[in-house]
Image 1 (cartoon, rainbow, N blue to C red):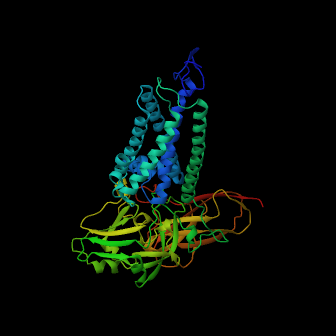
Image 2: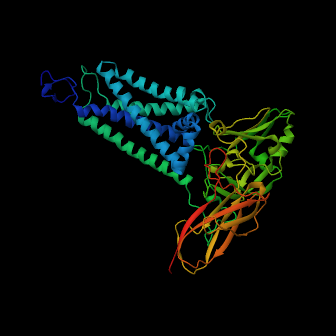
Length: 528
């Protein structure tokens, strides 16, 4: 019809009872479309960057934000959150970050709509949004997360990092521009139906991305909360199968290291710096050591503890080749994910401190530090650095990733004991023979005895101890009990280390020095 703008199909738009032709007038419902597009676009852009992080080992937005958040949180708040959330902490943080992306992206899209309404060119707005997304990640998040501008110190380097952020920015801009409209005096380039169909298609993509996010969060939760493995009697096996070995990592995406290009450098205050390749490491005379590894986050009665057989070389042999200078204080371990921690030189020179490449007779799994990691008996797992890339000898007390956040620097394991059977809340038939058993661990101090109380700590009876697999592993203990009266019983266990010192009975959270307190369960004896 004469006077109709091309491309609008002769349609008129109504708003508050007025009819307009050739002019964009949005209803209140339509005004939410840009926000929805911005939220969807930013979340998909973030997920695109996370997927590329898994493929290319580039920095992940979730990881960069989490590293900064944990560094800024006061120690008391961090401890409270960790204690309350436990294994759900990382998945929850991941989902909250995605929601934050959505809110910010929605606001940016509303700004884009405002600029278009003032007749700013669409290409200018699109390029501006791409630049904003890219700069926010490359120039703000990357340095805050500790990998430098454009990820210059990240494993993948600045080129791949920049490209990953750019692809995420392009995803964001494309989706947002599908949800915003041209300026009010411009012609409508596509019909409302096409715009809704296009947003619907991106919405399906968003559902796929949301499914990926939920699956990823589920994997994080499952990895952090595996059910403890037990034998036929319900006791923890003396040697933990590799598939059941506990996994803890600060990362959302763990690094994947190519052994053909991997090399380990020994530098710093040494007379002869060294470089060791994977084939050279495995060609050296190997030794195996069975030892228990425990996470400093392990709570009383927790399962973040496992025993494995580690194969590798003595770290002392490597350091002696490099010849440490007289002023060396700490040996610092640097990892492929940017993580670092240290131990004193004297500890590094002990014959039980190993540079390992195998667990239970097989190459280290990726989640356990392939191709090489450090094993330091008697010290919590955070200092047993995985994905090792460099060893640096320094003349000062180096504070690592978690020490900067308030955790222990010495990280000597606390004496612990745990009841595996029976389970808390279990109903036990009267007159039956009941196995009470579990594990006890005190690092290189060993376990001299374990005692069990059936009355909440009023009286104690000795438990039987199995010979440990090595002086550096946990000890399995057990006793048999035949209840003669019905009612509730509070079962408590306590261990004594090899020096004759009892386990600390005062309840304390894991942060900063590892949890203390006695594991206690309640069972009810009932008529059979």
